[in-house]
Image (cartoon, rainbow, N blue to C red; front, side, top):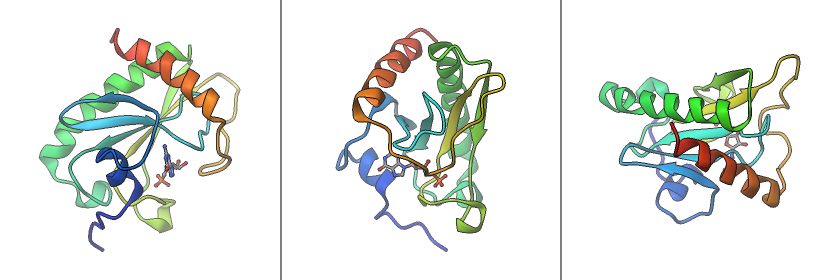
Amino acid sequence: MSYDADNIFAKIIAGEFPAHKVYEDETAIAILDIMPQAAGHTLVIPKAPSRNLLDAKEDDLARLMPVVQKIARAAKDAFSADGIHIQQFNEAAAGQTVFHLHFHIIPRHEGVAIRPHSGEMENQDTLAAHSEKLKAAIAKV
Ligand code: 5GP
Protein backbone atom coordinates (compact mmCIF):
# COMPACT_ATOMS: atom_id res chain seq x y z
CA MET A 1 0.00 0.00 0.00
CA SER A 2 1.23 3.50 -0.74
CA TYR A 3 1.35 6.67 1.32
CA ASP A 4 -1.88 8.68 1.34
CA ALA A 5 -1.18 12.38 2.05
CA ASP A 6 -4.76 12.84 3.21
CA ASN A 7 -4.03 11.68 6.77
CA ILE A 8 -4.45 13.58 10.01
CA PHE A 9 -0.73 13.77 10.85
CA ALA A 10 0.09 15.27 7.42
CA LYS A 11 -2.57 17.91 8.14
CA ILE A 12 -1.07 18.60 11.60
CA ILE A 13 2.44 18.95 10.07
CA ALA A 14 1.01 21.39 7.50
CA GLY A 15 -0.67 23.39 10.28
CA GLU A 16 -4.11 22.60 8.85
CA PHE A 17 -5.35 20.77 11.96
CA PRO A 18 -4.73 21.71 15.62
CA ALA A 19 -2.51 19.76 18.01
CA HIS A 20 -0.60 20.31 21.24
CA LYS A 21 2.77 20.64 19.53
CA VAL A 22 5.68 20.43 21.96
CA TYR A 23 8.59 20.40 19.49
CA GLU A 24 9.43 21.10 15.86
CA ASP A 25 12.63 21.11 13.80
CA GLU A 26 13.42 20.54 10.12
CA THR A 27 13.02 16.76 10.54
CA ALA A 28 10.00 16.21 12.75
CA ILE A 29 7.29 17.47 15.03
CA ALA A 30 6.27 16.09 18.44
CA ILE A 31 2.67 16.38 19.61
CA LEU A 32 0.72 15.07 22.57
CA ASP A 33 -1.43 12.05 21.77
CA ILE A 34 -5.10 13.04 21.97
CA MET A 35 -5.95 9.65 23.59
CA PRO A 36 -2.95 9.21 25.88
CA GLN A 37 -2.12 5.82 27.33
CA ALA A 38 -0.38 7.65 30.21
CA ALA A 39 0.27 11.28 31.13
CA GLY A 40 2.77 12.77 28.70
CA HIS A 41 2.13 10.27 25.88
CA THR A 42 3.78 11.99 22.91
CA LEU A 43 4.02 11.19 19.20
CA VAL A 44 7.19 11.97 17.24
CA ILE A 45 6.20 12.41 13.60
CA PRO A 46 8.72 12.85 10.77
CA LYS A 47 7.96 15.50 8.16
CA ALA A 48 9.11 13.11 5.42
CA PRO A 49 6.14 11.11 4.14
CA SER A 50 5.94 7.36 4.69
CA ARG A 51 3.13 5.06 5.85
CA ASN A 52 5.26 3.52 8.56
CA LEU A 53 8.70 2.03 9.26
CA LEU A 54 8.42 -0.46 6.40
CA ASP A 55 8.46 2.11 3.58
CA ALA A 56 10.52 4.84 5.31
CA LYS A 57 13.83 5.91 3.78
CA GLU A 58 16.97 5.02 5.75
CA ASP A 59 18.22 8.62 5.73
CA ASP A 60 14.91 9.87 7.11
CA LEU A 61 15.04 7.29 9.89
CA ALA A 62 18.62 8.26 10.71
CA ARG A 63 17.54 11.88 11.14
CA LEU A 64 14.44 10.92 13.10
CA MET A 65 15.89 8.72 15.84
CA PRO A 66 17.84 11.51 17.60
CA VAL A 67 14.53 13.41 17.85
CA VAL A 68 12.87 10.34 19.35
CA GLN A 69 15.71 10.13 21.88
CA LYS A 70 15.51 13.84 22.72
CA ILE A 71 11.75 13.75 23.36
CA ALA A 72 12.04 10.48 25.33
CA ARG A 73 14.67 12.02 27.62
CA ALA A 74 12.57 15.15 28.13
CA ALA A 75 9.38 13.14 28.79
CA LYS A 76 11.21 11.06 31.43
CA ASP A 77 12.25 14.26 33.21
CA ALA A 78 8.97 16.14 32.78
CA PHE A 79 6.79 13.33 34.14
CA SER A 80 9.30 11.95 36.67
CA ALA A 81 8.96 8.60 34.89
CA ASP A 82 10.75 5.41 35.94
CA GLY A 83 10.98 4.37 32.31
CA ILE A 84 9.97 5.26 28.77
CA HIS A 85 7.97 2.91 26.58
CA ILE A 86 8.40 3.36 22.81
CA GLN A 87 5.65 1.95 20.57
CA GLN A 88 5.48 1.90 16.81
CA PHE A 89 2.83 0.02 14.78
CA ASN A 90 3.08 -1.04 11.14
CA GLU A 91 -0.17 -1.58 9.22
CA ALA A 92 -3.65 -2.20 10.57
CA ALA A 93 -3.00 -5.84 11.43
CA ALA A 94 -0.37 -4.62 13.90
CA GLY A 95 -2.61 -1.93 15.40
CA GLN A 96 -1.70 1.08 13.24
CA THR A 97 -4.58 3.54 12.89
CA VAL A 98 -2.91 6.64 11.36
CA PHE A 99 -0.89 5.87 8.25
CA HIS A 100 1.97 8.36 8.54
CA LEU A 101 5.03 7.06 10.41
CA HIS A 102 5.16 7.98 14.10
CA PHE A 103 6.79 6.81 17.30
CA HIS A 104 4.82 6.76 20.55
CA ILE A 105 6.73 7.91 23.64
CA ILE A 106 4.95 6.85 26.81
CA PRO A 107 6.23 7.74 30.29
CA ARG A 108 5.94 4.70 32.58
CA HIS A 109 5.88 4.42 36.35
CA GLU A 110 6.79 1.32 38.32
CA GLY A 111 3.72 -0.91 38.78
CA VAL A 112 1.33 1.40 36.85
CA ALA A 113 -0.44 -0.13 33.84
CA ILE A 114 -0.97 1.95 30.71
CA ARG A 115 -4.44 2.66 29.32
CA PRO A 116 -5.62 1.03 26.04
CA HIS A 117 -4.29 2.21 22.67
CA SER A 118 -6.67 4.71 20.98
CA GLY A 119 -8.87 4.65 24.09
CA GLU A 120 -10.43 7.75 25.67
CA MET A 121 -9.94 11.38 24.59
CA GLU A 122 -8.07 13.48 27.14
CA ASN A 123 -9.42 16.77 28.46
CA GLN A 124 -7.93 19.75 26.56
CA ASP A 125 -6.91 21.58 29.77
CA THR A 126 -4.94 18.54 30.93
CA LEU A 127 -3.23 18.27 27.54
CA ALA A 128 -2.38 21.99 27.64
CA ALA A 129 -0.82 21.61 31.12
CA HIS A 130 1.16 18.53 30.04
CA SER A 131 2.30 20.35 26.92
CA GLU A 132 3.77 23.21 28.98
CA LYS A 133 5.57 20.77 31.28
CA LEU A 134 7.06 18.87 28.36
CA LYS A 135 8.11 21.99 26.44
CA ALA A 136 9.98 23.23 29.51
CA ALA A 137 11.82 19.89 29.80
CA ILE A 138 12.61 19.78 26.05
CA ALA A 139 14.22 23.22 26.31
CA LYS A 140 16.66 21.73 28.85
CA VAL A 141 17.77 18.53 27.02
P1 5GP B 1 -1.27 4.30 15.70
O1 5GP B 1 -2.29 3.29 16.04
O2 5GP B 1 -1.43 4.73 14.26
O3 5GP B 1 0.10 3.93 16.07
O4 5GP B 1 -1.58 5.52 16.64
C1 5GP B 1 -2.20 6.70 16.29
C2 5GP B 1 -2.26 7.51 17.56
O5 5GP B 1 -2.67 8.80 17.20
C3 5GP B 1 -3.24 6.99 18.61
O6 5GP B 1 -2.54 6.80 19.82
C4 5GP B 1 -4.30 8.07 18.69
O7 5GP B 1 -4.74 8.29 20.02
C5 5GP B 1 -3.59 9.28 18.15
N1 5GP B 1 -4.42 10.21 17.42
C6 5GP B 1 -5.39 9.90 16.51
N2 5GP B 1 -5.92 11.03 16.00
C7 5GP B 1 -5.25 12.07 16.58
C8 5GP B 1 -5.36 13.48 16.44
O8 5GP B 1 -6.16 14.03 15.71
N3 5GP B 1 -4.50 14.22 17.20
C9 5GP B 1 -3.59 13.66 18.05
N4 5GP B 1 -2.81 14.49 18.75
N5 5GP B 1 -3.48 12.33 18.20
C10 5GP B 1 -4.29 11.54 17.47
